[in-house]
Length: 474
Image (tube, rainbow, N blue to C red):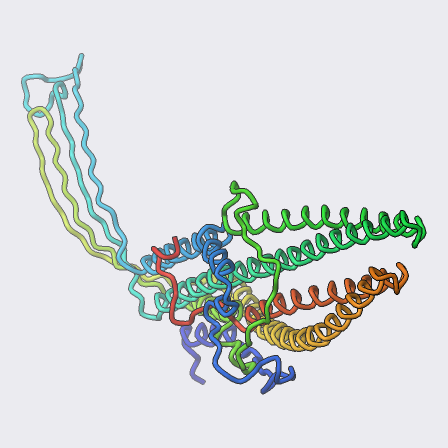
């Protein structure tokens, strides 16, 4: 029976160890979110924040993308990986350095020399010079350079998508903080209005008590509510200042006063969310594409580990020059050489097998991470769409309820001013209106924040055709 060649055995071992399962990327064909959460039509996901038609928000996000430390760190990481890619590729190109040495020595021989015979005396000055240029070049017959390039390019892609993901997350954080600040501004405006109404109500109750048409306890009751309203104003002013400071920090404007952040005390309708299918996440989400790039890098490193079983061929040409000058003697020479070597792993094969198995396990981990990224993307996107639809319906219901409660309070307040209602009835109507209005404001702000989550979950803020160059990443 004919025995197999050593190379065939090594190739079989490498191929067996490189067998890798494919990731499971199956997703439902459609979201189960209501149609109102994702209306038909084309809404741009790139620079999604401009869909809110808020110049202040757009300016804050643009500033954060330039000045925030997280964005600058991701850009620096991208530059680092790009530089590492060059080093990984150049190791398979000819390597070599030129060297030169020179020495001059003055010698005075005290004894034991035959001074009159040329070449025998060592006294005097001697000089020695030499130079060499030796090259080492691994001749890549088995594709090691291709595997290394594949892994290095994948690492650059992963860093690039990390850069895009960091920017998308930063934009979402700025928008979320901005809408929270607007919600606080609305609550502060409402609290100030409540304090004004309570102060007017206190004045009315006091005048009615003075003329004897109401009890003095009514004025005391309103005074207690007025103090609570003033305390609420102070608390909301502090919270709004904290949120404004957070926005300044996100945008890299730490030293500026919080008054420089303009926050209007109003909210609008959240913009439309584009109608998408789950499969679009694989093409848009930066974290999904980063996980896929990490898998490609792991596969390239696994190929490199498998190719380590095969022989390594080295070509080593060189040039040299030498010059020696001594008393009575002079020598000058030059040389060139070429050679090569073949290295075949033998006793290191068990270690190489262990390395290959280790890399295979890392590849499996990259596969599982890719699957998890896809599943997480789908879960986040569908959850955001479902919750956004619920928030919109809640806003619609509370808007109608707030309008009705406002009309009821105005009628009750008018009756109290004319002496037709008692204080308790008026205060109950006001509390009902204020509670409904507070719920409406919270729902409106939540809908805005949920729309930000939906844009981010669907891969918004990432442009497939616009990857940053080294200069742009700075």
